Length: 313
Image (cartoon, rainbow, N blue to C red; front, side, top):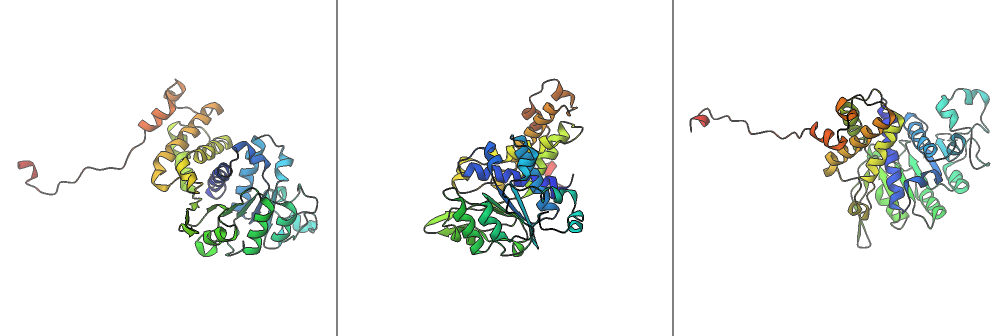
Protein backbone atom coordinates (compact mmCIF):
# COMPACT_ATOMS: atom_id res chain seq x y z
CA UNK A 1 0.00 0.00 0.00
CA UNK A 2 1.41 3.36 -1.07
CA UNK A 3 -0.43 6.21 0.64
CA UNK A 4 0.78 8.67 -2.03
CA UNK A 5 -0.93 6.54 -4.66
CA UNK A 6 -3.77 4.44 -3.24
CA UNK A 7 -4.52 6.63 -0.21
CA UNK A 8 -4.41 9.96 -2.01
CA UNK A 9 -5.98 8.46 -5.13
CA UNK A 10 -8.97 7.07 -3.24
CA UNK A 11 -9.43 10.34 -1.33
CA UNK A 12 -9.27 12.50 -4.46
CA UNK A 13 -11.68 10.13 -6.21
CA UNK A 14 -14.06 10.62 -3.28
CA UNK A 15 -13.66 14.37 -3.70
CA UNK A 16 -14.27 14.17 -7.44
CA UNK A 17 -17.47 12.17 -6.92
CA UNK A 18 -18.69 14.63 -4.29
CA UNK A 19 -17.84 17.54 -6.59
CA UNK A 20 -20.04 15.97 -9.25
CA UNK A 21 -22.79 15.64 -6.66
CA UNK A 22 -22.32 19.31 -5.77
CA UNK A 23 -22.92 20.19 -9.44
CA UNK A 24 -26.04 18.04 -9.72
CA UNK A 25 -24.38 15.12 -11.48
CA UNK A 26 -24.32 11.42 -10.61
CA UNK A 27 -21.25 9.29 -9.85
CA UNK A 28 -21.78 7.50 -13.17
CA UNK A 29 -21.11 10.79 -14.96
CA UNK A 30 -17.48 10.64 -13.83
CA UNK A 31 -16.83 8.90 -17.15
CA UNK A 32 -17.95 12.04 -19.00
CA UNK A 33 -15.35 14.31 -17.36
CA UNK A 34 -12.21 15.69 -18.97
CA UNK A 35 -9.39 16.20 -16.48
CA UNK A 36 -6.25 18.30 -16.50
CA UNK A 37 -3.78 17.03 -13.93
CA UNK A 38 -0.87 19.36 -13.23
CA UNK A 39 1.92 17.27 -11.77
CA UNK A 40 3.40 14.06 -13.18
CA UNK A 41 4.99 12.67 -10.02
CA UNK A 42 3.78 9.69 -8.00
CA UNK A 43 0.85 11.62 -6.51
CA UNK A 44 -0.33 13.15 -9.79
CA UNK A 45 -0.03 9.93 -11.78
CA UNK A 46 -1.42 7.86 -8.90
CA UNK A 47 -4.50 10.07 -8.60
CA UNK A 48 -4.98 10.05 -12.37
CA UNK A 49 -4.71 6.25 -12.49
CA UNK A 50 -7.27 5.88 -9.70
CA UNK A 51 -9.79 8.15 -11.41
CA UNK A 52 -9.08 6.50 -14.77
CA UNK A 53 -9.81 3.06 -13.30
CA UNK A 54 -13.08 4.40 -11.89
CA UNK A 55 -14.00 5.64 -15.37
CA UNK A 56 -13.29 2.19 -16.77
CA UNK A 57 -15.43 0.63 -14.03
CA UNK A 58 -18.19 3.06 -15.09
CA UNK A 59 -18.14 1.76 -18.66
CA UNK A 60 -15.29 3.34 -20.64
CA UNK A 61 -12.58 1.36 -22.33
CA UNK A 62 -9.01 1.80 -21.08
CA UNK A 63 -8.15 3.83 -24.19
CA UNK A 64 -11.23 6.04 -23.87
CA UNK A 65 -10.52 6.75 -20.22
CA UNK A 66 -6.85 7.60 -20.82
CA UNK A 67 -7.91 9.98 -23.59
CA UNK A 68 -9.79 12.09 -21.04
CA UNK A 69 -6.60 13.03 -19.15
CA UNK A 70 -4.06 15.74 -19.92
CA UNK A 71 -1.07 15.53 -17.58
CA UNK A 72 1.13 18.60 -17.40
CA UNK A 73 4.58 18.87 -15.81
CA UNK A 74 7.30 21.53 -15.70
CA UNK A 75 7.96 21.33 -19.45
CA UNK A 76 4.31 21.43 -20.43
CA UNK A 77 1.94 18.71 -21.59
CA UNK A 78 3.27 15.19 -21.21
CA UNK A 79 2.76 13.83 -24.74
CA UNK A 80 4.58 11.36 -26.95
CA UNK A 81 3.81 13.48 -30.00
CA UNK A 82 6.64 16.00 -30.20
CA UNK A 83 8.84 14.16 -27.69
CA UNK A 84 12.19 12.59 -28.56
CA UNK A 85 12.11 8.78 -28.49
CA UNK A 86 14.79 8.70 -25.80
CA UNK A 87 12.84 11.10 -23.61
CA UNK A 88 9.67 9.05 -23.97
CA UNK A 89 11.56 5.85 -23.18
CA UNK A 90 12.88 7.46 -19.99
CA UNK A 91 9.35 7.92 -18.62
CA UNK A 92 7.90 5.41 -16.18
CA UNK A 93 5.32 3.06 -17.77
CA UNK A 94 2.56 4.78 -15.78
CA UNK A 95 3.60 8.16 -17.22
CA UNK A 96 3.83 6.75 -20.75
CA UNK A 97 0.23 5.56 -20.52
CA UNK A 98 -1.00 9.13 -19.96
CA UNK A 99 1.24 10.55 -22.69
CA UNK A 100 0.11 8.37 -25.56
CA UNK A 101 -3.59 8.83 -26.14
CA UNK A 102 -5.68 12.03 -26.15
CA UNK A 103 -9.27 12.74 -27.10
CA UNK A 104 -8.09 15.98 -28.75
CA UNK A 105 -5.79 15.48 -31.72
CA UNK A 106 -4.00 18.82 -31.21
CA UNK A 107 -2.31 17.66 -28.00
CA UNK A 108 1.46 18.04 -28.39
CA UNK A 109 4.44 17.79 -26.07
CA UNK A 110 5.09 21.06 -24.27
CA UNK A 111 1.64 22.63 -24.67
CA UNK A 112 1.08 25.14 -21.87
CA UNK A 113 -1.60 24.86 -19.23
CA UNK A 114 -3.57 27.66 -20.87
CA UNK A 115 -3.22 26.01 -24.30
CA UNK A 116 -4.58 22.71 -22.98
CA UNK A 117 -7.48 24.39 -21.18
CA UNK A 118 -8.35 26.27 -24.38
CA UNK A 119 -8.54 23.25 -26.70
CA UNK A 120 -9.39 20.36 -24.34
CA UNK A 121 -12.04 22.29 -22.38
CA UNK A 122 -11.56 20.26 -19.19
CA UNK A 123 -14.28 19.95 -16.55
CA UNK A 124 -11.88 19.30 -13.65
CA UNK A 125 -8.60 21.03 -12.86
CA UNK A 126 -6.40 19.17 -10.36
CA UNK A 127 -3.04 20.32 -9.04
CA UNK A 128 -0.23 18.17 -7.64
CA UNK A 129 2.62 20.41 -8.75
CA UNK A 130 3.75 22.13 -5.49
CA UNK A 131 3.97 25.37 -7.53
CA UNK A 132 2.27 28.17 -5.62
CA UNK A 133 -0.05 30.37 -7.68
CA UNK A 134 0.14 28.18 -10.79
CA UNK A 135 -3.63 28.42 -11.22
CA UNK A 136 -3.54 32.18 -11.72
CA UNK A 137 -6.39 34.49 -12.70
CA UNK A 138 -6.04 33.84 -16.44
CA UNK A 139 -6.03 30.06 -15.93
CA UNK A 140 -9.01 30.03 -13.58
CA UNK A 141 -11.09 32.46 -15.63
CA UNK A 142 -10.39 30.62 -18.91
CA UNK A 143 -11.25 27.30 -17.28
CA UNK A 144 -14.45 28.78 -15.82
CA UNK A 145 -15.54 30.28 -19.14
CA UNK A 146 -15.09 26.94 -20.91
CA UNK A 147 -17.22 24.91 -18.48
CA UNK A 148 -20.21 27.26 -18.30
CA UNK A 149 -23.07 26.72 -17.62
CA UNK A 150 -21.55 24.02 -15.39
CA UNK A 151 -19.61 25.00 -12.29
CA UNK A 152 -15.80 24.75 -12.38
CA UNK A 153 -14.26 22.00 -10.26
CA UNK A 154 -10.81 22.91 -8.94
CA UNK A 155 -8.75 20.70 -6.64
CA UNK A 156 -5.33 22.21 -5.78
CA UNK A 157 -3.84 19.38 -3.75
CA UNK A 158 -0.32 20.65 -3.06
CA UNK A 159 0.63 21.42 0.52
CA UNK A 160 1.62 23.19 2.64
CA UNK A 161 -0.43 26.29 1.87
CA UNK A 162 2.70 28.07 0.63
CA UNK A 163 2.83 25.59 -2.29
CA UNK A 164 -0.88 25.47 -3.12
CA UNK A 165 -1.76 26.19 -6.77
CA UNK A 166 -4.54 28.63 -5.86
CA UNK A 167 -6.07 29.95 -2.67
CA UNK A 168 -9.73 29.49 -1.87
CA UNK A 169 -10.31 33.24 -1.73
CA UNK A 170 -8.86 33.74 -5.23
CA UNK A 171 -10.80 30.79 -6.65
CA UNK A 172 -14.02 32.24 -5.22
CA UNK A 173 -13.28 35.74 -6.53
CA UNK A 174 -12.22 34.67 -10.03
CA UNK A 175 -15.27 32.42 -10.55
CA UNK A 176 -17.85 34.76 -8.98
CA UNK A 177 -18.40 32.23 -6.22
CA UNK A 178 -19.24 29.34 -8.57
CA UNK A 179 -16.16 27.18 -7.94
CA UNK A 180 -16.48 23.71 -6.43
CA UNK A 181 -13.27 23.47 -4.42
CA UNK A 182 -11.26 20.98 -2.40
CA UNK A 183 -7.63 21.53 -1.46
CA UNK A 184 -4.77 19.65 0.09
CA UNK A 185 -4.11 22.54 2.45
CA UNK A 186 -6.66 23.99 4.87
CA UNK A 187 -8.26 27.35 4.08
CA UNK A 188 -10.58 29.57 6.08
CA UNK A 189 -14.15 30.25 4.96
CA UNK A 190 -14.59 33.22 2.62
CA UNK A 191 -17.17 36.01 2.93
CA UNK A 192 -18.30 37.49 -0.38
CA UNK A 193 -21.34 39.61 -1.14
CA UNK A 194 -22.97 38.67 2.14
CA UNK A 195 -22.50 34.92 1.64
CA UNK A 196 -20.15 32.56 3.49
CA UNK A 197 -18.31 29.98 1.38
CA UNK A 198 -16.91 26.94 3.23
CA UNK A 199 -13.93 25.09 1.70
CA UNK A 200 -13.13 21.39 2.04
CA UNK A 201 -9.77 19.84 2.73
CA UNK A 202 -8.99 16.76 0.66
CA UNK A 203 -7.23 14.79 3.39
CA UNK A 204 -6.44 11.07 3.42
CA UNK A 205 -7.86 10.81 6.94
CA UNK A 206 -11.33 10.57 5.38
CA UNK A 207 -10.46 7.27 3.67
CA UNK A 208 -7.52 5.26 4.95
CA UNK A 209 -8.60 4.75 8.61
CA UNK A 210 -11.88 3.30 7.35
CA UNK A 211 -10.09 1.14 4.80
CA UNK A 212 -7.84 -0.27 7.51
CA UNK A 213 -10.74 -0.77 9.91
CA UNK A 214 -12.91 -2.62 7.43
CA UNK A 215 -10.12 -4.72 5.95
CA UNK A 216 -8.68 -5.75 9.32
CA UNK A 217 -11.95 -6.60 11.07
CA UNK A 218 -13.20 -8.53 8.04
CA UNK A 219 -9.77 -10.22 7.89
CA UNK A 220 -9.49 -9.61 4.16
CA UNK A 221 -6.71 -11.51 2.42
CA UNK A 222 -5.99 -8.52 0.16
CA UNK A 223 -7.35 -5.01 -0.42
CA UNK A 224 -8.56 -4.85 -4.01
CA UNK A 225 -8.93 -1.81 -6.25
CA UNK A 226 -12.69 -2.30 -6.10
CA UNK A 227 -12.56 -2.05 -2.30
CA UNK A 228 -10.70 1.26 -2.54
CA UNK A 229 -13.30 2.55 -5.01
CA UNK A 230 -16.03 1.47 -2.60
CA UNK A 231 -14.30 3.50 0.09
CA UNK A 232 -14.29 6.55 -2.20
CA UNK A 233 -18.00 6.20 -2.96
CA UNK A 234 -18.84 5.79 0.75
CA UNK A 235 -16.85 8.91 1.64
CA UNK A 236 -18.56 10.95 -1.08
CA UNK A 237 -21.99 9.75 0.01
CA UNK A 238 -21.19 10.58 3.65
CA UNK A 239 -21.33 14.32 2.89
CA UNK A 240 -24.69 15.46 4.26
CA UNK A 241 -27.15 17.70 2.44
CA UNK A 242 -26.43 20.42 5.00
CA UNK A 243 -22.70 20.19 4.30
CA UNK A 244 -23.39 20.27 0.57
CA UNK A 245 -25.48 23.41 1.05
CA UNK A 246 -22.45 25.09 2.67
CA UNK A 247 -20.36 24.22 -0.38
CA UNK A 248 -18.45 21.30 1.17
CA UNK A 249 -17.41 18.22 -0.78
CA UNK A 250 -15.91 16.39 2.20
CA UNK A 251 -17.60 15.71 5.54
CA UNK A 252 -16.93 17.87 8.56
CA UNK A 253 -13.97 16.61 10.60
CA UNK A 254 -16.19 16.41 13.69
CA UNK A 255 -17.96 13.45 12.04
CA UNK A 256 -14.81 11.52 11.18
CA UNK A 257 -15.75 8.49 13.32
CA UNK A 258 -19.10 8.09 11.57
CA UNK A 259 -17.49 8.59 8.17
CA UNK A 260 -14.80 6.01 8.97
CA UNK A 261 -17.50 3.53 9.96
CA UNK A 262 -19.33 4.10 6.67
CA UNK A 263 -16.08 3.59 4.75
CA UNK A 264 -15.20 0.46 6.76
CA UNK A 265 -18.60 -1.09 6.09
CA UNK A 266 -18.33 -0.36 2.37
CA UNK A 267 -14.83 -1.87 2.24
CA UNK A 268 -15.87 -5.04 4.10
CA UNK A 269 -19.03 -5.51 2.04
CA UNK A 270 -17.09 -5.07 -1.19
CA UNK A 271 -14.46 -7.51 0.10
CA UNK A 272 -17.26 -9.99 0.71
CA UNK A 273 -18.41 -9.60 -2.89
CA UNK A 274 -14.81 -9.95 -4.08
CA UNK A 275 -14.36 -13.17 -2.10
CA UNK A 276 -11.44 -11.96 0.00
CA UNK A 277 -13.10 -11.85 3.45
CA UNK A 278 -12.05 -14.62 5.85
CA UNK A 279 -13.73 -13.49 9.10
CA UNK A 280 -15.98 -16.39 10.12
CA UNK A 281 -18.76 -14.29 11.67
CA UNK A 282 -19.17 -12.21 8.49
CA UNK A 283 -19.04 -15.27 6.26
CA UNK A 284 -21.81 -16.79 8.38
CA UNK A 285 -24.06 -13.80 7.72
CA UNK A 286 -23.43 -11.37 10.58
CA UNK A 287 -24.64 -7.83 9.89
CA UNK A 288 -21.49 -6.11 8.65
CA UNK A 289 -22.23 -2.68 10.13
CA UNK A 290 -23.23 -4.03 13.53
CA UNK A 291 -20.25 -6.36 13.63
CA UNK A 292 -17.71 -3.67 12.77
CA UNK A 293 -19.30 -1.24 15.21
CA UNK A 294 -19.02 -3.72 18.08
CA UNK A 295 -15.32 -4.21 17.28
CA UNK A 296 -14.60 -0.48 17.37
CA UNK A 297 -13.74 1.39 20.54
CA UNK A 298 -14.22 4.92 21.76
CA UNK A 299 -11.18 6.35 23.59
CA UNK A 300 -13.02 7.58 26.67
CA UNK A 301 -11.43 6.81 30.02
CA UNK A 302 -12.68 6.90 33.62
CA UNK A 303 -10.97 9.38 35.97
CA UNK A 304 -7.85 8.23 37.76
CA UNK A 305 -8.23 8.26 41.55
CA UNK A 306 -5.24 9.89 43.21
CA UNK A 307 -6.61 10.45 46.75
CA UNK A 308 -5.44 7.49 48.92
CA UNK A 309 -8.41 8.08 51.27
CA UNK A 310 -10.98 7.90 48.46
CA UNK A 311 -11.95 4.28 49.14
CA UNK A 312 -12.26 4.85 52.88
CA UNK A 313 -15.12 7.29 52.41
